Length: 94
Image (tube, rainbow, N blue to C red; front, side):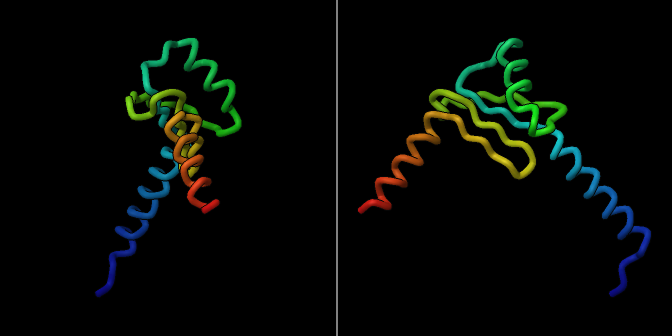
């Protein structure tokens, strides 16, 4: 079965465009809503991640801190993440 070359080109262009948009968009997850000052500070502190826009979500399971996802990068600065790392380290010691 042959694929229409124009359809293939259009699909490739669409996917590359969406990937580029995702890499410029950050998902910031926190336990509570962030105010404008906190959002500005986050953008300044993590400016090396090159995110142009951000989506802010709240998740009570984070407990404290934040989780930032930009493209395939994840920065977990949450208490839940730290406890999980500690738990994994303790299991590795046994």
